[in-house]
Length: 114
Length: 114
DNA sequence: CAGCATCCTCTGTGATACTG
DNA sequence: CAGTATCACAGAGGATGCTG
Image (cartoon, each protein chain N blue to C red):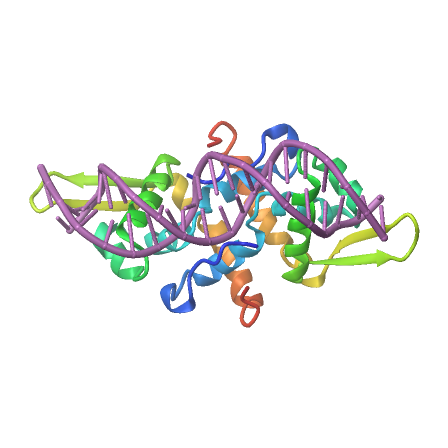
């Protein structure tokens, strides 16, 4: 779950910014979304693309993204289990936002990593 | 300090996204930047605009923003103390990014707050 | 394959009090 | 005015093992 930041009265103007940040905050959300922008992926396909994430974390982040209606989780009742993750309309609408973050990062972060 | 997320090898494509996120992550960074986009502000002026932030937190977030070269801290050697915070060139370059976050939030977060 | 259950660590955030 | 110093805590993030 993303951190709860402020209530509306505290951030007259900056609040939507924080609200959006809340949704994509979380150590792996950005990268997960980034890969889903490309295509729908299964659980283990995502794992392979994020070599250092643990199963627990991947599950958690996916559940949060799902809860925030950014991604859609489709379970196929087959054996072995098959679960696909894809972007919702809302999630897809984040693409320009993520793109803005990426563009800025590409341009200004080259050697300035924290 | 923002969380350290991944090393570069883990996020071939999504890393700049996370890197940028690291800089503006932190419960109050977004709002602080938002107010500084408008004008240079003194410590207590910022406090007044962020009614619920504690002194300790405001100081911490400002120090992190400064450390990341997003804002400039100017100390006037007078009594009583006077310290002004303004955006650096780098900080100002974040404006379109913050704007993207705000635009998205305004459009999609109306009743969807987490 | 795609998880869940446990246990643990760390750090971001906050409350409170004091100071040059 | 603009901080610093302590203390405290919830929860983000991680390691490991088990399962339908």
